[in-house]
Image (cartoon, rainbow, N blue to C red; front, side, top):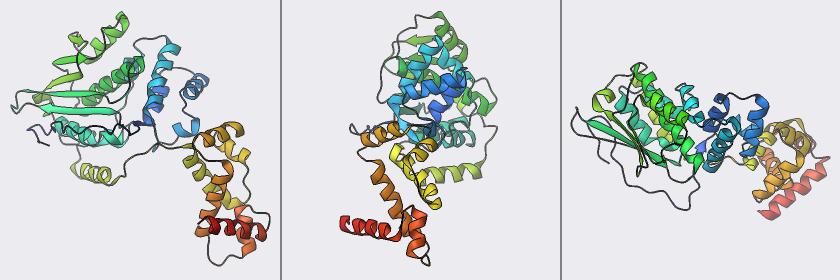
Length: 347
């Protein structure tokens, strides 16, 4: 991968595994729901319709299938009846709301160096988002940012790209304190039928010269703009963030069984646990929880036994068998011994 003078990486040409499931940070749908200007009940209804349960939206480290994020955008536009809703949400964007991918850019020395880190670590935000910035060798030339979705078509993908591209512009302006305006904007989508949508795009990009129906989404900037220093540049913090991003394991989608195990770990300390009590903690009902677990090929009983087995391994050595049984919610020591025998047989 060649490093260009502005600090931007050229495309590596690496493709996406066709069998890999693409995903987005849950911070993306969370941000959308918090900025569309609807009441809490409507947000809750839209989230459930997009298969985004409440516990998931409050878990900032979680990843969700990208199709849910795109579906949410379709539901949001239908609910608000606002064809420019994605651009309007971008205007509400405060850099830092998407976690480490934002701070890697904000703490870089220049805008170009920040975009290089965005290119390098985009997977921390989305494995469905393609982001490549390619620069001319001439410092007085231009840099073109190519971006798009690896998978996803239709209106949901258009709206997701609107807020992604427009949010990038907002972040660049906030980071530099300058009104950075691209010299060229080309979008894959057809020209909008809505004048409101077209006007909102033109106003945010700062230019009415937007070409629609392009082969790829691409936004071109002057290299002199990308050489601008950033207001919050912090080389020490930036190095720490890069190291953290390098050491972070590849993200994976957080499942219902994952979340159930987290809750059981804390609840088993107090003894007996019921499926109804756990369902309330997960902001759902017993039947919904059972159905979700079945969809993942597991069950409440299996997950409870799994959590109990782990708790046995983690308990202090000095406990009596009766105390161990009580802590794990078994009726008596014999029930615990039978469970341990089952675990041994399975092993």
